[in-house]
Length: 468
Image 1 (spheres, rainbow, N blue to C red):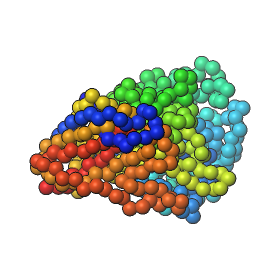
Image 2: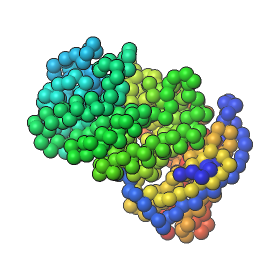
Image 3: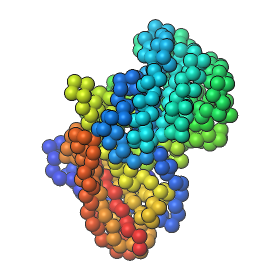
Image 4: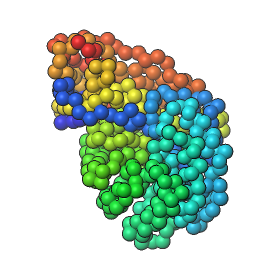
């Protein structure tokens, strides 16, 4: 949380924007006022549904399994734009768009993979094809194979963008919520008749559709849905193209928080949990030099906590199994090898610090710094200080308002905001087999609950304070 955040210490770097000046920051943690508990499966990844047919999700795909296991508990969402371009076994066309069939064998393989990583699943089915009976058949089969791992079946994907030529022409120009409402009502009736009690989710709309689609949908279907879902990207890969400065700017953070508070308010009124089931730094696949660099991991670390602090059930960073864009996990089709991108390290940071109860935390500084804190079941306090300032390091005083005096520091580090590979969290990097090395932390001593930490520009640090 910010009031004004604090900068951090940085070594001299080739980037003219990185580091240089020094300032101070103060972080105050209300350690005696624990609030919401972060769900154990809050963190997740989202994949295009065609990834099932591409055989990534196999029980023998050890590297891919390790890349998920590194992150602890989570929710894997199968959806994205391709959910409307996949159909259960039949491969029927959605308008003029070719469709990939999903087979029972691929579903069996997928859930064998899920058992290997011990994650839960949000499984998307096609709505655009207007064949709810086929989707009902798919849900019936998937429910048997997925058993207790299923969080919900998400019906359709971004219906508010069903007409976005030339790429999306699922509906005619002018398609709006009243038409969608009738289609969803008809689909839910058919699906629920064959699968009584199946957990259903939606509307999976874009952020631009929150007012006209999300809010009315969760109210209209609060008795049929068990989970509200929507999508969000704070910037867009269109002119004027986003920059690192824009991604890390306070205005971008404020936009994200406002979205989360608005959607949580609508979901609460409907009595539904809400999950940000698809999100990332920049829509349309990401912006080169912004979404695929170290600065994105700094942004992601802050974003994960900002959304959690609003009481959201969880988030799923959308993942494109290729070599470009915002993806946290990359895949080289030529070599058949997986690797991680900078955003992945924000997930490692959140796994370390993003559990337990949220502690109210305030950061004050003239620089762009934020802070978040949690109280774990192990009674340790974890304070996350994120310096999104590109020109200042910060000498930061952290007041935990306890008598605690010992702890450790783990750092999110990169050589420059635009670095793509030399990145680590707590000294951890990811090997070719998808595994991570043991974390390395710095011991720290404080006095009467106060600790002083120097944090480089465009970086983050996690202070873990031992129980008294």
